[in-house]
Image (cartoon, rainbow, N blue to C red; front, side, top):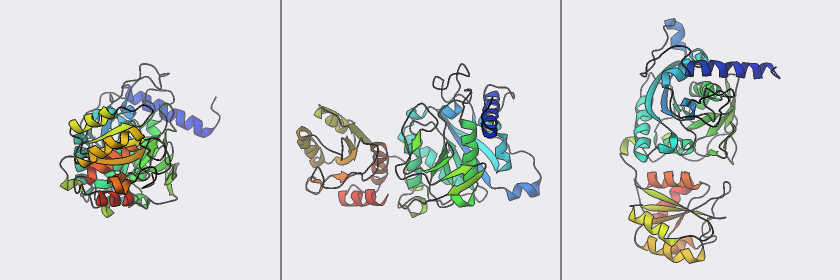
Length: 373
């Protein structure tokens, strides 16, 4: 028995989602889904939302309905994802495109740029009011922040994933996708920056991070969510104060590639040669994911000073999930010409550094950028 009417409704959505993903509704095309033939007058009243699919768990399938953590990602095409949530057609005129079909840990910088350009292209169209991107959760936070930095549009951009495949009894993808379309179609989401809509919450793509790997409530921001989606309605409670989208100085239409930025994770007994290997591989900057306040072990200071003197940028971040790295605390950043990542975790610091380096390598300018974004 279900404990409440909402539990029963959620279970029903999950069963419908699983039915479609396992082929219960028959074969569907991999190409962009045609909008249903609805009454023209009614259709014009609804926003137009494009769903760009990239793979991930939300497009995953397990061998058994009891498998919520064991499955194969990126198996289900976009048309089946949309067909599994027929309620989206009551919210918006929806069509889909399959951009990639990969697990998100396999995302490359080149694919980030390709995705960003497609989002930018779509949002320039008068007949597109918002974009939803289905994405694997492993690097969802990096993609969200990247789009927040480089897409010059105030139209809603919503990135969505799921922690469980659609074939699982407890699948969360159907409701997450419905909520994502709801946010993408809402006027309240205009100008809010890139958002991540999962587990009933609306998170800032700039702030959100994945904190756990096995439950639906995986994504958090230390500054709190922007709002929530409850039964098809959006509720916003705060706004992103950092520069983003139309207020950003970066433009995906002017970016064709990203410079290589490396991350070295801080721990006890560090190996200096790891930093040298990053430089030899072509890294233009290294994010030091230090302990505590972005700390650097005493025996590594000379290594990082030498790297910086030879032209590679050093950015101090922290492996600690929350808080922020203070400039000239722990290390004399001014003296060593290093940059601090402020409140950005190492993965997000890597994204911002790569984007910033498309414009400047001046450390004072880079530090300004880390303060403002």
